[in-house]
Image 1 (tube, rainbow, N blue to C red):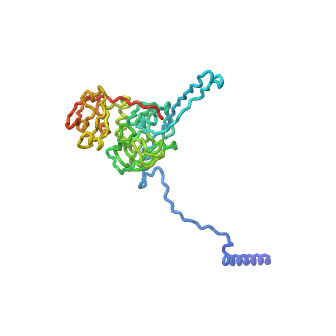
Image 2 (tube, rainbow, N blue to C red):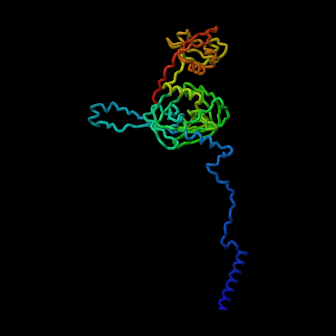
Image 3 (cartoon, one colour):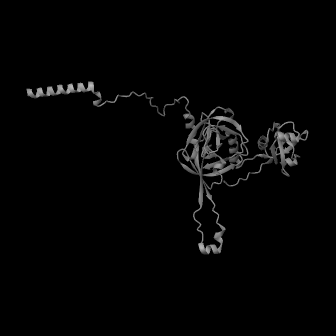
Length: 385
């Protein structure tokens, strides 16, 4: 027994000696132990934590997201039968052409719930020509929608779905919006799903873009892409300030210039459509053009202010009031006319059948005309290209 203990002691001594020598002279021969890494980790938070991190817009997004919907449309494409298939000789050799299944074109866009009982505000071009419209809510529930009414000249439309107690968005005050304010654009770009992008208000009152007949856009650099049309532009409190409508792009993607219809214009048009099914605007029956410096010199005008009347519809309110081509419209009900776009907006805001005072220049003299305002004819839009 004593001998076994002696052997064990000698073996342990030799092993420790070898370990000491190797660890001193060749430490790389020994297996390496990985050092522990000390990490700094932020404390976990829960949904019960009401503190919003500095610079975060989570509260605005949380308030507005449930009110923004996805809109899916389908449109049947009519296939034309070639005249050769009606030729008896052709049919004798090649037989009848099978009719086949009708082709359908699909589209997508966004919309905003504006009332708990199912009214949805979107762009006219999102639902233009659609045979079937499906609306998908934030909770993934899908409903078939009907068109309540539309206004192609402002590119707005109202849909309705059969649902109750929907999360309607809160309307903001456009008068409080300023260039430089932070805004969020919410929609369904490229059909990838609900998306929030951030930017600032780049400009207000943008017009002369050739997008709509009536233009008064909010310009923003928040990323707006195909599929965002009809979605919400909200402020930092989640209140609706605009309806995303168009982008300036040479590639089809966002280049940092997007346009939204102000909530004030959208609300006025929406209320008219819901109440009467259409939008009523004033009309006098004139065609106007911008006064350039060359035109001013040609007509002997002192400046380029106003709108040059290029044509008058026979029997129209303007014709009845004695307005003639070549006249220059200077003001409508005391409000100055800077160009044809301003003239169009001022006349459209008038109520049909009311009498309005128009100030004009003819040759070298200034005169006033009382015009009984007519109702602007509905715009006929062609099918989608």
